[in-house]
Length: 586
Ligand code: AGP
Image 1 (tube, rainbow, N blue to C red):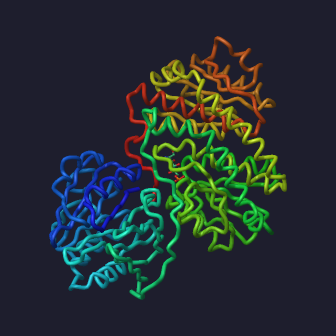
Image 2 (spheres, helix red, strand yellow; image 1 turned 90 degrees about the horizontal axis):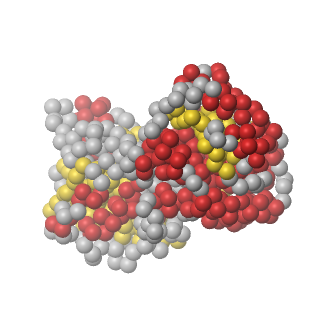
Image 3 (cartoon, rainbow, N blue to C red; image 1 turned 30 degrees about the vertical axis):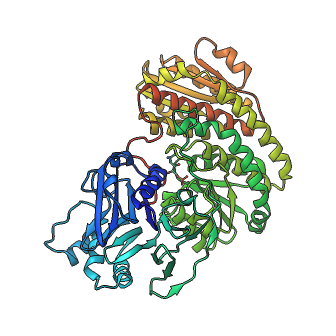
């Protein structure tokens, strides 16, 4: 949610920052901008739209120090004037986060002053300028002490040949080079740096080409660990794929295998955290929550322990019951989703234990958790999560087996056997006719029971977010309790049927849709279901596999369905309107 980048060194800074913005663009693509420092002067270019909109403008920026920003709008619509960097006096600033007391601060310090933008961020640069008397550190400290909310800020100052950075509740990472240094919102954008430092909340850093000095909120110098950057480069290469979404769906099989190896190294620590635990809560947002719904069923089905799945934004405000025997699994691709991170912090503050299920080893979530169940999906660029969902499901499956005391090698074998079935499904799926039905429909409903219901929720979210077609993921048994009223000739109902003991019940639900003239499709690996519904419903046959693992396969069908429907409707599947990949604000 907004990407910030900074560079200081010997090279042309605007080009390096531009490249960094391209790598961070999935964090927001409402507008972009760069400010560069040249001979004590600051030059800024910014535009509504994607990073590309800066093409042709940055050739005028010659300096060796610059900051840049790619925006997901919170305060103020996407526009040139609301784009970052914001400039005041000797400063140009980029910000990721939300300043909750911005109006209060404006009234208190800038009554009668006309702001250049409608953003909350502008108040930060104005405060820094107000407090500046030649000492950047004090100006930042005084400003930080007034801000409520979240921020990762990078700025340049006409008097200082370097970058200043401060952060609270949003990520800021320093990357070290040779005679040059960097700052960025996340580690993959710093993949050319061999070592990095992850700043802590309250930190203020001064970064020059020769070194980095870090201070805490009282301006005491602090040493923060300089660690090896293991992040894979967020490869912008698409290979033969027209979109990241397709590329990433094709990476699902490798994600399953890689997540297994990563889990093997993490299992011992997970076992230690499990000691004394008698209650499991799985929390996350969006797709990660949907993976949590499956995780809950895995814990119950495999370990026989009651489990709950809670949306993180609900969990953190419901005064949850957590004690030292409660384990919260916080699921998050990015590891920086504000609601999930806060839910995890809350669980810890109540005495519970936390395991992060995440794709981001350097994230805030990992740092605050007792252990990590790693998801090894590699960088995911498309805003719609695909391979990371499958990786989360695989990690949760392995976790449930650890909890049950099952030998992990056996479960890894099962997952590794499913990986080629995912590959086969992705490569050979024939989805165009169903995608066409969905693209022409007035609404698409995804229905299933038990684990198939969990997959239905994810199928629905995927289609909504990239095709903008309304619909819902619903338990099939609930259809007749309300949703059936929506069914008519213009709706499509997609059933996922992979649990044999529930197949008959699901076929009944399909019949209920067909008798209301609704269109129906079935994703199944059960022969009797195909026979009963042949010629009356669109059948998508998927390979058979152990029942608990069919979600890894069926979800790839729904991901491909969403992708193909979006293409038919000429939507950009990688950058859906109004969204951003990491939601670091409430
Ligand atoms: C997924 O397609 C969505 N973009 C969104 O729901 C996402 O899963 C959610 O914001 C959580 O993100 P996280 O996994 O990084 O925490």
